[in-house]
Picture 1 (tube, rainbow, N blue to C red):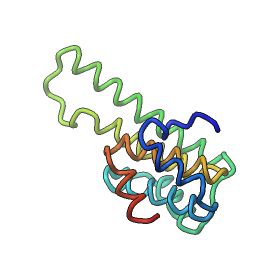
Picture 2 (picture 1 turned 45 degrees about the vertical axis):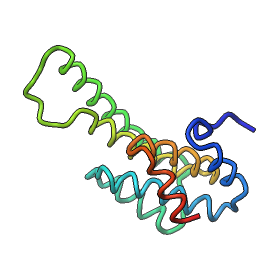
Picture 3 (picture 1 turned 180 degrees about the vertical axis):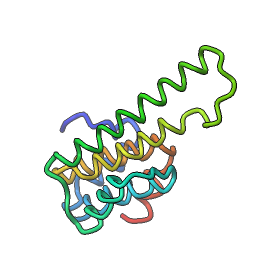
Length: 145
């Protein structure tokens, strides 16, 4: 089996995800992304469209995921710039440290949830959701599996 990032956080959940059918894997991928975005909302029309797509049971061929990945990249860059300003001594920053990075991880969970392979969608969106809020993947998994 491929070395999945989820194996470092929750190997027992990864093992169970392997046994689930594609429908359950897709449902969990959606739930992981939805929970991550509920924890750190991102106001973006593309995010809303992606959630609607997943809600309908569909996934993406890659083009739409690419658009959302660009948003992840912007949010990551904003977080790195913010951290650089802190490291340089800035003290007048209103945004809590890490919130841009958390939003990037939430959108990344959504990007992965749209993946055409249901197992990849479930495992990678779970990993990213847990980066938003440690323990979130277990809460979602235990509530829906």
